[in-house]
Image (cartoon, rainbow, N blue to C red; front, top):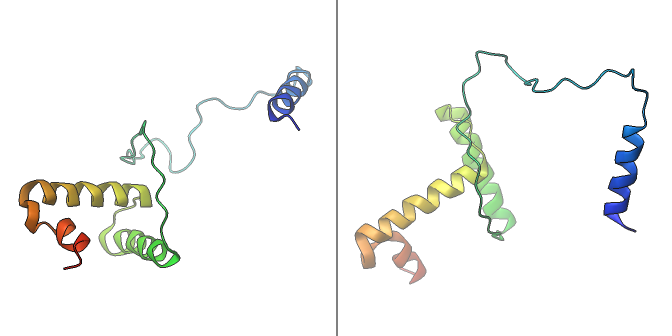
Amino acid sequence: RDPAAERRTAAQGAAGRDAAAPAPAQGRRRGRGANRRPSGRERHDEKITVYVSAEELMDLEHARLVLRGEHGLAVDRGRIVREAVAVVLADLESRGDASILVRRLRGR
């Protein structure tokens, strides 16, 4: 099975469709319309994979729902993780040996 060949075949089939068929709308936005505020999401060029337990994933999802429900912040789990990492690294930089990260990694 060749996925690239399947994509080419699908593209060729799409190109051969009836020319009178309406083209899909380009640039149309979904959702609430023109008065929509930017989401604050930004594109990231680097990626890491982190494995978490089912309980840790549930805790992260619970935090996302609390942020949305109680604080009005609609953020995704990736944003929560990036902010948490930034906070912990800033604490490490400023407090060093007394930082929460060092203490937790040492088991204290």
